[in-house]
Image 1 (cartoon, rainbow, N blue to C red):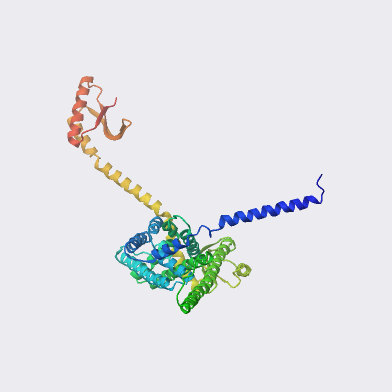
Image 2: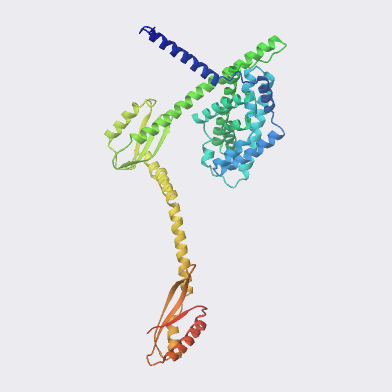
Amino acid sequence: MANTPQDLPTRSGFNFKVMLKETGAFVKELLDIHEDTDRDTTMETVKRDISFKGHNAWILVFSIFVASIGLNVSSTAVVIGAMLISPLMGPIVGVGFSVAINDIDTLKRSLVNLGVMVGLSVLTAYLYFLVSPIKEATPELVARTYPTILDVLVAIFGGTALIIAKTKKGAIASVIMGVAIATALMPPLCTVGYGLAIANWEYAGGALYLFSINSVFIALSTFVVSKLLRFPLVKYVNSRRRKNTARLASLIAILVMIPSIILFVNLLSEQVFRSKTKDFVKNVITYPGAEVVKFDQNYKTKYVDVYLIGKPVPESIISTWMRELKEVPELEEANLRIHQGTDQSSEMAARLSSEVKAGILEDLYLKNQQVVEDKDARIRLLEQELVRYRNSGIPFESVTKEAKINYSNLEEMSYANSLVTNFSKIDTVPTFNVRWKKSLSRSSRQSEMNKLKKWLQVRLSLDTLSVQAVD
């Protein structure tokens, strides 16, 4: 029997529902981690990795030394190498995991070992930077003195990846998964030691703040994953103690979670503010004959300072820029301040003529440093050639006078350095060209030529020279 038009939508709809159901089942199977979770082994592993003594302590010390060297010379590869051997994740994962399962004893042990880890790491980095001859703040060090949204994201995703890897049945290298956590923890701890070594409390405080934020989010990621995987809560014989422990764990989780969310939102807003101000200055602040040499943005004060050199920008154009800035989402409260090099009455003009110009000169120096070095090398080479040429020169006038006295048949004499090659090397050969009187016979001329050559070798102390007759 043929299908009627009324049957087609029904069958089509049925097939779509089946396909949707199968897709949902596939996605669930793809992303589900409950069945492959080894809860007992995970609990043992987390508790075992909390302790910081013996091998773990020494591994931490040497990995901190390696990371400090990498930060000191601004070598990303060396810092990554230190992360591969760093055992930093144990106590922090223990904090998040113990709060999730209401294990107050494990929580206490995790906090104690976390303090030991921080103290040992900072002390090691402090001692290194104290004796290191290189005290300059490299870009790798400066980048760890304040938190950014990227640091928080690394901590969140790294912590989540680590706890998921720990819960899986079978062997996943937790050290490899710990690299992401080391990225968020090790460089800040080394920077704390650097700040203390050079007595820069702003660096030390900022790096410690960054470490604290990253630690909180790693522990928070562990807490959330442990709750989602439904790890069994620790049971206590005393029901009152169990309830009190559960309340304490919940309170700690709330106290950590609320500030963390607020901090994350603030850091995200600051990152968006900085990104949009950068795009605005790049795309909007343009005027023929003027050039932006520097700009600063302050998220707290909402000021965007732009420094210009060249042709003065009319106030009407500046007003247009300010109006356009207010129309950019997330920048409605920002205030644009334009500082031009011709405005000598402005306080900022002094900064333009000092800081900005110094920055320009520094950039020019860095860009042309290689060119200058190449020219210096060329000058040194030419100086060496000149010295060698002068040293190989001869007192031509006195030599010719003596030659005329010794060889009366000479009519003319000239001197030059000839370049001679055998196609494997090039030599410089002193060459004398002489013209004899035509009345001199061929045999006498050859004899005189040989005598003249020997006399010139002795007179000029030259092992190699050439004497040629010119007709």
